[in-house]
Length: 511
Image (cartoon, rainbow, N blue to C red; front, side, top):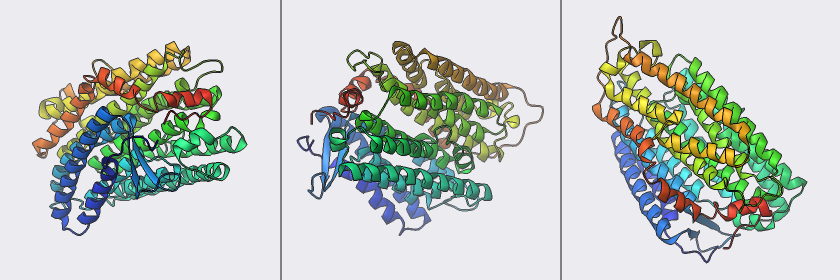
């Protein structure tokens, strides 16, 4: 792997937001917001430049301090990491722009919650570090940074409901971390290394490896709110300020999914069985139906969107049974692997754009109405047409209707399901889409229904509505580069030889 081209961008993508987050702590409230906004633009610009570099050179690395693995720390940016970093940058910069106006509009302070900015930049540095990390312990460190910042952001308002939800979130995060760390200790004790590339070569099947898999997988599912460990997500996301809810749902939970995807395809191939993949699939299928049904039953917009996240994350879990091949099946003959990967990546991206837009729109409605109870949504389309359009477009993507990114994800997921012969997952995918349509159309019906008595609306900055709408449009525009993006991902180490590691028992690749 050290023969790969080196680049300074992996280090800068972690170091720059971390440095600016630290510097912002020494500024006033207004200064924190200015530094935070500048940091968001600079980090996003770095992400775009780094993405272009990966498209031109392929996988690039950065060795910190000149110490090569296994003693040193190596940051690796392949096409999958580049896509996740790029997604975080695009969604993150819009949320930052929204947050600037949202917090300035708060009545209790000219700049709202100033600690949002350093916490958000620390969180962004943690996310970039997670996507770039190449060993198990650094993944643990980055996911802890993300978890601590996420909990702090969730309780930012200081309200009683937020504090209780934050405490539940913290306990869940600690439990997941301890499970993950215990599995890492088992692996290190049996192999003497934590480097993902080396582990793919030296990890052998046995009770220790299997037990490590059995504790790491639930630990990460707790952190990504995968069913049945989703209990902390709805209260934490719904009680946080709108920009925080958007960050938590669109970006934070994707970190644990990314680690799980990396470990299942690069490290644990020697211990994975067809039954293990089916078990994760069952959790995903139940999450899709249960989360969608719970969203339909809610009476407040933020709770609807929060429970919807549980369902949308379930679609990501449905990718795993398609990646674990049955005995006797080779990667060359498994023509469903490409659509399965496309489904997983597009579900991540489409959900990030749509769910961020949905939560930001909910924040706009709360600013205008003082609450988000859906019985007051009547005639909202005439009074707040841009916000209603953002909700409608985001909802179409969550349903999976064409020509949205959500459609691309679910269409490819169904392709993978039928090509693999695992038809039993299809009813969950289709049922989840129908249930999602039920609560999205319910909101649209109320928004266009005449109101007997109109509640007065407080003014909302126009630019906030623009940012929410642009994110919703982004969930459609992401299908335009679909062919190029799929080809880009096919060049990824994890796409090609990562699959082979599942089949052949831990072969990491040709580096």
